[in-house]
Image 1 (cartoon, rainbow, N blue to C red):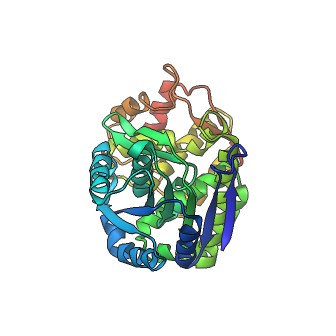
Image 2: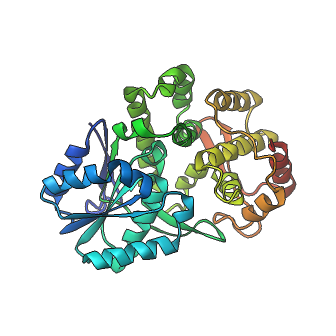
Length: 364
């Protein structure tokens, strides 16, 4: 099992370990029992993951003499709302949860956000533990303490920073993932290759077959590489005020098209479309050489990632959502752009006509 330490401001009490391995849930249970982070635990999970793993994890933790219950909510992005969090908190209160309790997020990115946000506001904040079950959550969303829920105004419009006590990424969970969920995670892995480690792009190009057959050792190595990159960025910029913004590569247009689709478009497809847009804009603004643009877009096509805005999507709707982007400053929409793979930067604002032209050009 790999153990990656995320150190925050040299404050040991807030630093935590990211554990990555295969069949590590027994180890996770032992560490929960040993560390005594709470008097009782509440597992929060969506209906699909709860049906697959809920009873198994409940039984495992109860065998460790831990007091633990399970609360589930309907799966899907539509559940990532303040109403879901309120319903979860009412159920927690009915179970007798209090300030000495902790939440375990068992699931993908939606569950991590719902559970993490709930933990940050229940009784003014209680501990949380992340057990991500999707590739996307293991390489990205379970790490770093960002929590959030969606509103009509936008994705993750309400949120907090609430670091977990630990993250346990068990590669064995990935065996039951639908292909679309593998693609979701793959989009984030490509993002890490683009912004920080071109070697990841080479690995994906050379070992695409290992990825497609879900080779456990290869997946574990990718998860570890991405965790190490994100951990390094968060240690330098926990609250997303500077360097951490490069993790938003592809997410500016990505979040806009995801929301405009009514969340029928998966997060991974949306981010892949957003990365395509960012790469094209980088080249059009003469930051990124044409050969690097083609290398990136060719790899994304090879991996089967989305690179087109759905044909029926309203471009005006996407542009309107970009104007409400959380990272907007004044009237300028700030993009993470590229000078070359491994060298991203925050652009001071992309001209509105170029954004429009790029999105129209990417319509399927």
